[in-house]
Image 1 (cartoon, rainbow, N blue to C red):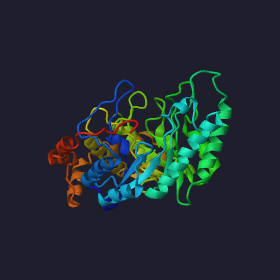
Image 2 (cartoon, rainbow, N blue to C red):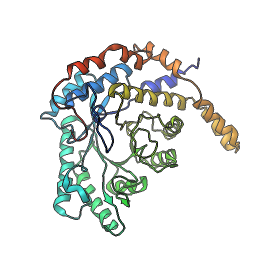
Image 3 (cartoon, rainbow, N blue to C red):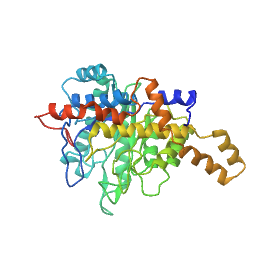
Image 4 (cartoon, rainbow, N blue to C red):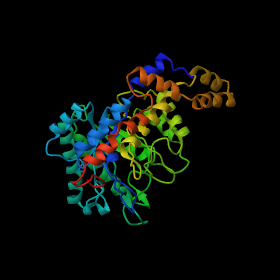
Length: 388
């Protein structure tokens, strides 16, 4: 059995992966949103489900909220509820992609009244951050155009810059703005923040507390995502990840499901660039469990990240550097492949047991009967999902 060194175990013990509240709600495709027995009906039940993931894995200490989906009368009560369950409230995610007024843009809209509404929504999110103790405001914009000539692309960038500046000016001293990018969808001709370079250009103009969010599903096929990770870490502008998997587009599948080797390569660059267990780089999930149960789906996700982190930490950095310096192409590649092909699962299972955790969290959750209990208890009301 592979032995994980004390240094590796120390790194793994410090790992925390933020869960998205919306992963516990119903979701689906543009054709259908599916229901699941036991789905939470309000943000308090979403937090309880996220806490259950942390209970079985000790990997998920915080929960991201989505506004307005997770609006409550008292954020103090929600924060105390989370703390009582052993987790904290994390990133606040804004939403300017549902209201009818945002059909042609929000922070980029030519109509000043609509743009004002979008800015004010983000200022409300900052107020919620003060109440929840959250550090990061994450912004993803479903904005762009479908046809050449439809809009003045430069004018939209100028309006975006002005909107972001107004939002950034309202942040507290310890708070950050994190700007996500996505190369297409729902706009198809051009997207206002389509790539890491556009996001970087916008946040660099704002200041040191504005960062880039990298969603692993938001890239064209064949994109070298680990190169982007390296570059943003090198520039000091990688604020957070949204981990998920994709086969064709922004599929939001369980991280590591489509290409575990890509996840390994990404995490290796995180380690190489000093991003692992760095408080300035947030590990997060952004996934939708359309047909599988939500809690075990999130357990599987965080375990996948942990496993690939353990493998990436096994890379012999000295041997790799020596092979690279000698331009020994095959030897350098072999160093990476040897670590990737190492089965760390037995060692991780043994380590979990030594910490009072189940060796196999997936099996332990299935045997706990919790899924059946919430399916039985959560009857009536309206299940949470897209838009709620």
